[in-house]
Length: 316
Ligand code: CA
Image (cartoon, rainbow, N blue to C red):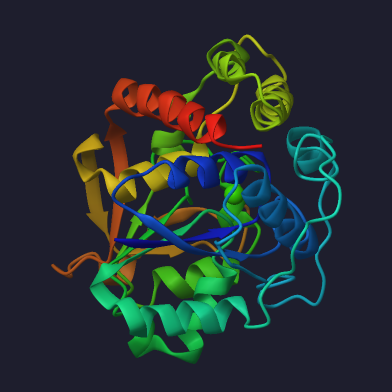
């Protein structure tokens, strides 16, 4: 299988890159970037730096959306700085990348890859759905040829993490998420319903230091920043949001419960950003979204820790 990661490259995105590179059955053919945890410039820079640190400079990085569909600008919040640091990597400085992003845009790379690989392609979006929405608007027939689209997004049976109703990737571009979810795109949503079952702490991550190299130290440092700050308590830790989306894309057997639904996103009123059933389609038998509800948590976490350790051992 070929896989593309669509990332707003903060800390759990970086962990998703490492986890994907460890997978024997998937080839990471590109990273498309956008605003979200960080500005798009930082998403590009962090992606290039993480790939370099892991010894994977063959993976191309494409620049995507700089702001939400219906806005002209984007600025990261104090809350994001607290969780991901000012640079998106827990304030761990990696310097300037040793190579450049690609000239082609993220949207054009997504469309070209959809046409080229079709069923063989898995797209995992782990940021706002802006690049996906733009690609769908530009070439819907091409994009619908993609074998599988998995999005770390939403909170259907749990509370949100930005507001009581909204999950961050949805909240950061509600019109884009609304567009994707209401345009008949078959998608697996890996939202807070399941990602909050993957909480880990620094204790598990510190294990990577057995490698005794720079890549492992950097990953442990920024992960500890994240796991100390996501819930403000290092004993509670934080969730493996983005890596879980990769895992469920590649190991469907780890998805132990899900519900099918046609979703919409609340665009008005107090519940802005809530992912909810589209009332106008409740009677339709055809459902476009599969919502992950339960997972094989222990299998995933064990695989995540050992897979990333393996990738880090081959890094700088
Ligand atoms: Ca992300």
